[in-house]
Image 1 (cartoon, rainbow, N blue to C red):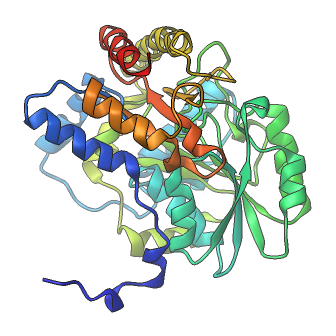
Image 2: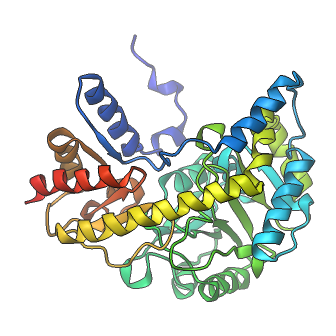
Image 3: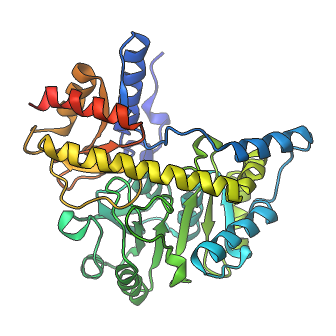
Length: 389
């Protein structure tokens, strides 16, 4: 049956495909045909949810009291998140500022819906996670991308923000650690960015969903020195709860009740089971598992990063967080899409083409996720070598 395009909204025509999901679909097809595919495309840890979290969910389900919670989330979980900030970062956050959400995407939706008017412009670095700019479009805003490169650790500068600011600018969105580059914004850089935005009476959103997954540098949060930013976090990455779809938003003081109205209409409430499970994510037993897995990711990083460089990929700035390497392929191939196609079809290695993440030299880059074991990473490097050499 033919689909009448007149039924589609104008905004839908501006939402670009998520190429990594098409790549994943092709990988699944090849696997169904008996091919062995090494997955380095999707940003999902290969570890299972830690057992203390599963046990907590099981115990809660046995009570047979699975009902809606508040649109802001369970008070006990909001308090647990506040304790996490106090114990890990020595920062005092009022639990009233914390909103539990269906994934970090839900947190970003709420922050954007609460602050964005039709025609508003948001500034973001290029490259950046694609859903961020498309969610802005969903709320009738637009995005102005700031080209960033390895010389500035793929993070925007305060000078860039000031120079790019225009009358309809609403704010700046940054990520630390970032996807796709794994780079981190230093506290000094973040202060400078916040000052630049504040001078323009703008809004700052800080994506911290890879917080905890850092290597060779200390863990930090924007909340240690900013109280007027919207800070987004997730139970998916460090806490290993991807399929549970749970995150949180820390809003500036006084925003929670307004955001609750949005949450009630958007989601009713976050998953009750996931919230009870997440209470155990902060337990000493679970935190020990999270730390072991962080060390495992660091060990993988130390295999993949030099391995790609030896094959001719250029990595201009070393990733210090998340679980990605954003590699320049220009010495090996003319275009990231064609290389991604060759890798999956001829080598059985799935990696993400740079065009998913923006426009600034995107075709000269690919993102490799080290979300698979060290043995598989060595095998992937051997397979890639047969293609690029």
